[in-house]
Image (cartoon, rainbow, N blue to C red; front, side, top):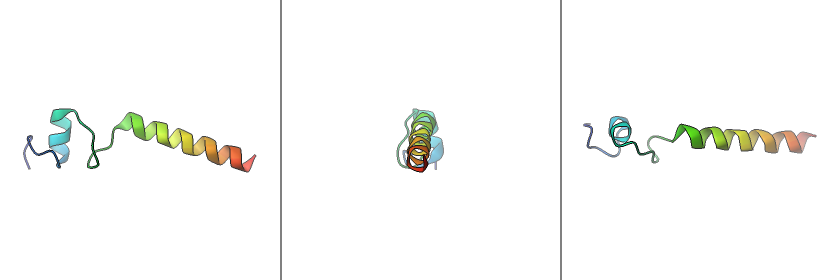
Length: 44
């Protein structure tokens, strides 16, 4: 698909949005850190 297609990866990159198709890397990192911290607290 082209750059105007919101559902394609290329469309997401060109628009600078991050929806279900292409997750925002910053949000992914934050979610991973929270999950890791929760697992660490549960085990300790």
